[in-house]
Length: 133
Image (cartoon, rainbow, N blue to C red; front, side, top):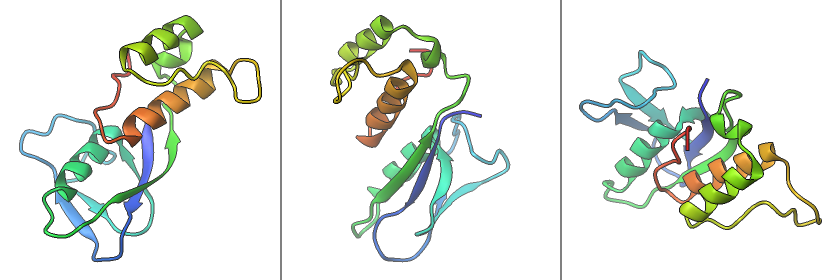
């Protein structure tokens, strides 16, 4: 399983059926699917599918957005075996706020930092950090 994100349409309106772009090479949540179906109920999508949906929403003649819920991190995500120093470097390279320090004092765990990195970076509508970064 790769990283998955709970996604739903953020504004009232009809459900959407978003076709995968021609030559789509990204990961699908259902390998047999020919389109991404979205409505107001949360469903799990891959990071690649979220990017397709965000691009599609920009083409609509009306305003629509995605609401995101929980992010589910792949237990085999290579960032989970990273050191704090490696995560510091990734955050610096991506111009992200450093997440090493906990708001309550001390250091966050690597797992907590990976979740924040994956959530934050995808949440701003940019390409996701490559899993091996």
